[in-house]
Image 1: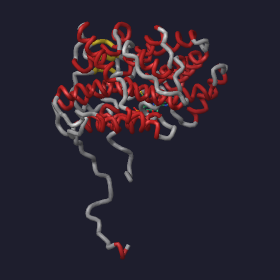
Image 2 (image 1 turned 180 degrees about the horizontal axis):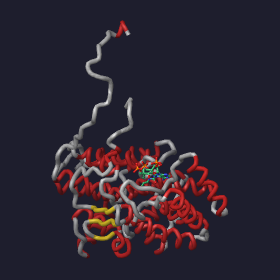
Image 3 (image 1 turned 135 degrees about the horizontal axis):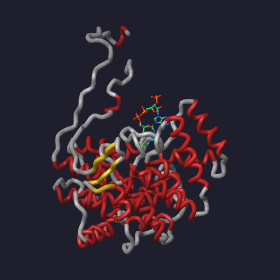
Image 4 (image 1 turned 135 degrees about the vertical axis):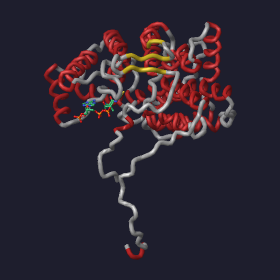
Length: 379
Ligand SMILES: CC(C)(COP(=O)(O)OP(=O)(O)OC[C@H]1O[C@@H](n2cnc3c(N)ncnc32)[C@H](O)[C@@H]1OP(=O)(O)O)[C@@H](O)C(=O)NCCC(=O)NCCS
């Protein structure tokens, strides 16, 4: 057990690698993918265009995008064996299921052991397509609904909502979900991406690297925060008065509890993703006839700013946005993975392309050397 506080502070501000994929400026609150501002991508692009951008470092032409869409469509259905494994799992945490099923996918990928760059790229496409189907189908099984086959005529965002609900999503819902996918697609060396890159850097396979990333994303300090935000909102209630909201939040802060959806290791300003999600939460809340979740969120945001000078991060308004889209809370973190798989695979491919084993050092703070070894029988 460590005997003093970690003096290395969670690698804060340590620049661990170079990357051409994503840049963020925490002081100015700016986020860009391959030089494109996140706001321009959120307002003008689709998730498929962003995938192409992350994987190729440039936006696709119309025909390149068409090719990618066809590849997605071909890759979206799941092997029957994966559906069988999914049905055999006990009901429960979607991230646990996603971790197991992503790992299982490797067994049914004929190119799993092919380390050539074209094969790695094809696997990135397949992983991105299939993780979406896994999460939507898992969501169906949790409500005792049967799996719904993807519709090749639909884009990635619409297909996810269709496979999840069985209903053709409205243009509005599709666009909102597409924007959420774009905003979550990449975020430099966040914990899960770093986990994926560390695994890839051992020259382990892309499935293992993705499974490592999924494990890291699950934690409440990372992707798990969006579900924690929704639980907090439900605990407070949609119709809570300002006094009730203030009391609930202040009582948590007094107990030194962290308020999920606030704070960030890098941003010192507003998280630029939160700006878009706040707007979506407002519009979708009004449209769904439940504007209360947005109002409660706004009040919490103002209070946490006032009390702790902390800004909302990407997870805070994602919660009420997903809720307004009718998505179950259990799927909030898996949905993060539906988007972030694009960034994970971009980073994993970048790592393979210019690899060196990632192997830092630790400052030793254990018992002094040399300790006198005592035989088991004498201890
Ligand atoms: C994101 C996060 C993990 C960053 O962690 P970090 O850079 O290690 O920062 P710390 O946890 O050391 O926080 C620094 C200070 O701010 C406080 N703080 C940070 N986030 C807080 C929050 N959400 N609610 C209340 N206080 C918070 C800490 O208690 C700490 O205060 P102290 O110095 O008085 O002890 C952290 O802000 C957090 O846990 N947020 C909630 C979970 C979340 O939303 N995660 C998603 C991130 S996108």
